[in-house]
Length: 309
Image (cartoon, rainbow, N blue to C red; front, side, top):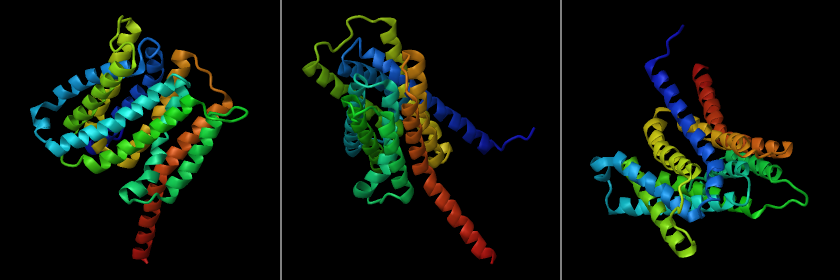
């Protein structure tokens, strides 16, 4: 048996760890959908993120927080606000749409990013990104298809969520250089917990669980420990060991896991048309990521051919 080089083995292990991140993210959709039947949306969010913030604070340590200056804290608060809005719209959307739909629609952030990068970061969208958007939007129509066709409120809310996720990704690209990732993540998650707590105290009748059934405890453990603290740690630790394109393609697994867990845990039923729509959304997401790679490879082969001539 051929033994792979150490660097290649590290890359494969890193990619496996990123796959586990998408698994936990996907599992949260049906879990959260059930949890918000026991607790109001913002009450659930603030407790979840408060628990995750405590864990991330220990993970960052003094050395991590030493990298944060005033600007770092302000940038973390801004990024946390964007992320909180994404979770807020997603969780309210989950109340009124299926968790499978929410998983697929949240994944659309992958195709929004290149479109928004043009006006916001002066990085115009590539041809592949535009085609990916067209494919994904076709999938959106099929995923939510019924006659006469229209988006229900839950789907619209999750669509808005995907836009805020895309804005957060662009913010990470713009604002994170020079700061410890764990400390900056702590600021973001703490901001989310604070905003959720304030919102819950103002708008909701209950801001803390009156009872702690095992389903709610499990939901907090999975979403706070595995889908937030662990996920951010794994991304920080392992994403640098693979390429950005391969990491982005791995993250497209999230809506697939969401659909699998929704069918398994909630007995949700997706029609063949909805499955086709979900698959088209995945194809659009993958196309948007793979096209630039194919173009670069073609250009590289062309240059090598010219040099040989």
